[in-house]
Amino acid sequence: LQHNNSLRYNHIESEWLYYLTVVKYFALIGQHTCPKITMKEMEALYEVFQKVRNKWKTENVMFLGDLNAACSYVTNKGLKNVCLRSDPKFHWLIRDEQDTTVCEKTCCTYDKLISGIVPESALEVSDHYPVEVDLKANHRYLLRHEL
Image 1 (cartoon, one colour):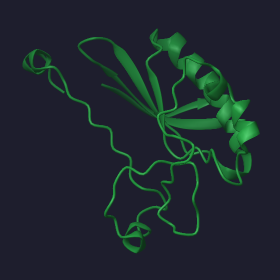
Image 2: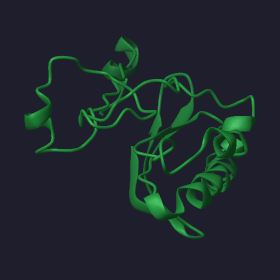
Image 3: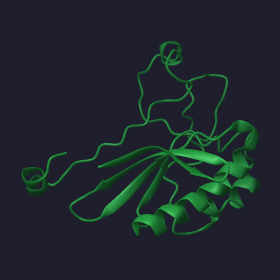
């Protein structure tokens, strides 16, 4: 497990974790784009992908986080021009019509992963529903390696 608190590239900063699995390497890149320059930062994420790919020789990269890729920050037309959106090798796992904000006044392009959260209590933590990634290691790998 390698961890670095910040991978700085041009004008954006991303949190990242990099793991070795039994099969291959992959990278998780957490990003919260600044609403005022969302489009610029989303375009720069393609450059971050290229840097990660070149450094660790893997194309298994997942971007996670609040990209502000909807509503007043990014238009549908603008989103189509984002490299991460127009390049067919990238798969957006969250449908555009999904709403992951807990605020009842907005309905933006984010995901709903957990039902049953009382919106008022959730807002004390974040204005988005939580995202969870569950990764499981191979049993043989666990016997031979310390996590």
